[in-house]
Image 1: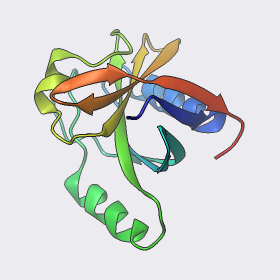
Image 2: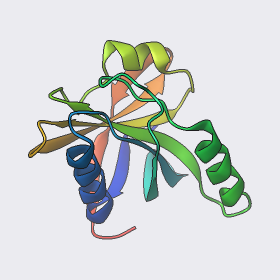
Image 3: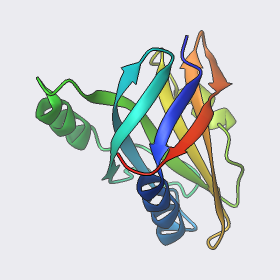
Image 4: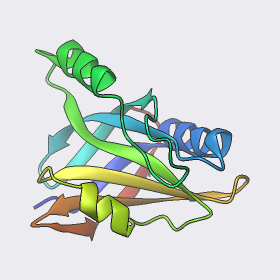
Length: 141
């Protein structure tokens, strides 16, 4: 059972900057990484277009998702999750996130931001629920 994830500081900063730049709308993207024992090691993030027209929703562009899947074939890395922001919201999954989640074992990084300050929470979707993960900040990917 996954209990933690390693997130390099530079990638954390990228997510926080994307959340601030998109404010008051949600930013979103895909998370690349590998699974090692009971943790996920995040190796890259891939910002994507938010196709949602609602300020408080996100929809990752399927074409970008498919393109990333193809580019990761044979590399040993995979799309392990997604990230998005909650403008003026909490760093935890919302009711809308719960309704949109489907993939078992998928990691969700949620960045709560007020436009100048940001906080990230890490979760894994399992058995129709989000479970919090311990987030280890690392120096590099």
